Image (tube, rainbow, N blue to C red; front, side, top):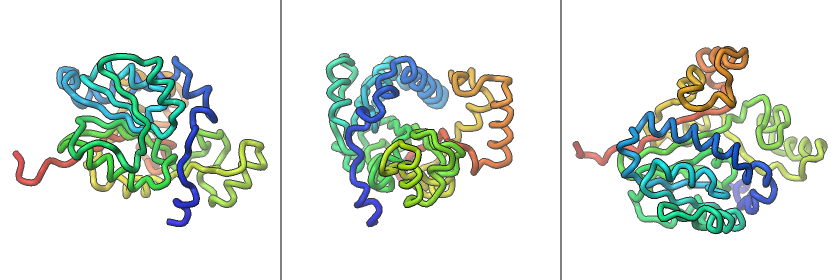
Length: 261
């Protein structure tokens, strides 16, 4: 708990990583993959009537794309500068952006059909509280698109340093300083087993293997070219050493209310 209190909130992320947060092409590619996974699971005829909450919306590029498939999209982020940019540039009756805290969502219980939580858990002071809040605001049988990096990944994807997330955090701070990429390693990743505990309240449907086996189906060829050595290696890892996958795509379903049909 002391560690979480010391970390506090990671505000101003878009100012530190502006190139990626404002990159229209890269963000739309990511959004297209999310869309394909959600449509595959829920069906386009259903999503057109559904509400979606994006926890960690940043500049709103992904939300604007997803609004093509959903009835209503609300994006929240603690980063007020990024949200102001989204409010000023992503204007639609189907879109709404709010500065908000992922650990204290300002919505009633059972409010949303879908929640997106993509590469966010490592940025909040307490990921367990955030996941409890996502569970609370999801409708029974609603789903959360959960994309998560693995602590045991060979390369940490924020700072692109080998084994940064795997080593003890005090060494991580020193490593970051030595590499000239900062003074404090904020992000706190979990291993596969830690992630499973984090989402234990949900029913988990794994899309990691599906995406690796058929990148074209999920518009993910930009990450994993079909037929490449990289794809074959990824297939070996996901089939034999799943706990070593660098990241996971899971759909988390909130169980139905007890007694409901």
